[in-house]
Image (cartoon, rainbow, N blue to C red; front, side, top):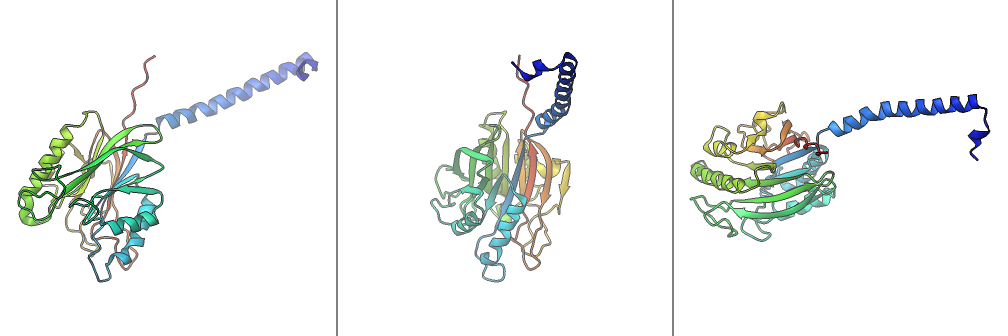
Length: 302
């Protein structure tokens, strides 16, 4: 027999009322918290970062920059980052300093040599469902292929990611366009090929395109890409940092050539990050980081 049955009826009534009051209080507290958590948007932090090859032999050599660059990534904690000009030993150095990240990529001539469009992602936040590469040329499936008059191979490294927390997916493209002034026609061709590939993706799938496009937002390549995608710098309601990104290790940028373009997501913030240690910068480009919200999921039908 429950001990409460031994109590007088008046005491049993008092206990029941207190129990009901406690349950009501917990319900009143818990319901708003549950609603708040349900209403909180699922976010995605994306960075684009031209890390500069290890070609420099002066004070800006890679060995002087790698710890600073790793510190920036640790502090900013992007979920995913598209890099440009990354070579394998730089990727290995960063991987050793950033155990929370995994990375993948291929050299632009095929294999492990030369520059990679390496993609880093948080292992606790994302998993790769599929990935690959194609080259910005008339023969996109041929590694190292070059077309359109520029001297170096250019490529896209891409992946389809799934958020571990909720199963949401998105596609990331990461690229680096030709750099010479006389390469604008080639940059247009690069943009057209990427646009063609994007059109083949499911219409309702979120897409992010990161890159060093070596051209400014008033250019034809930008117009080609933003016919399909949005420029986070132009659309995010909160923006910080300079509106230009290439600074050649001076800290004074003169061009906005690093972009994060997107579709199917809601931009929340975008920033050009100017971190330095007083003596040097982590790269000759400022990284750009955008935070996006995924669209709310449709309510389940009863």
